[in-house]
Length: 171
Image (cartoon, rainbow, N blue to C red; front, side):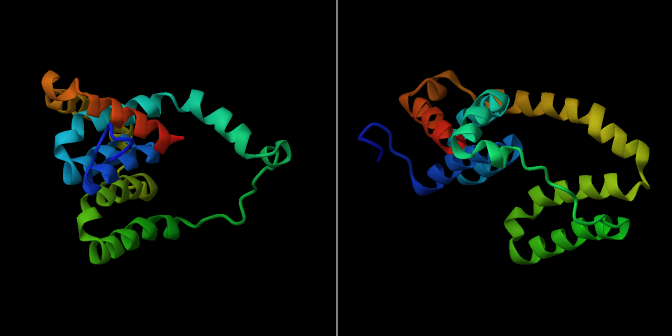
């Protein structure tokens, strides 16, 4: 219960909190698992804040770091071999599947995309996935989330609470 105005269960609060990760697909996946009734509002909040990153992030970074810290230039310590780049997604997926099986579908897609890009074996397929297919998938994702946005459930005080808590999580 937040100031007596908005109240969320623990799974709902966790789904709202992931908005702060600034990753739309993860927010949608988690809210689909933890709080499907809030999926539409969480998706709108997550993608809205992702679009606002260039406006939100700079003042926060200026407030939390000194000018000297912002001038630090990072150098690459060593070059990562092609073998390591290929083994990383495979080992990561195996560990996630064994230790966190519920997260395997989400991380599996990240690992698969990374493996396609780094292996170089499926160059045309990788190029298609990175460019054309991602736009099509984004359209379908938007349509499916939009179908969940029923006006009588979306236009509620709870939605304003989600947007407010999303800003706090994002900042």
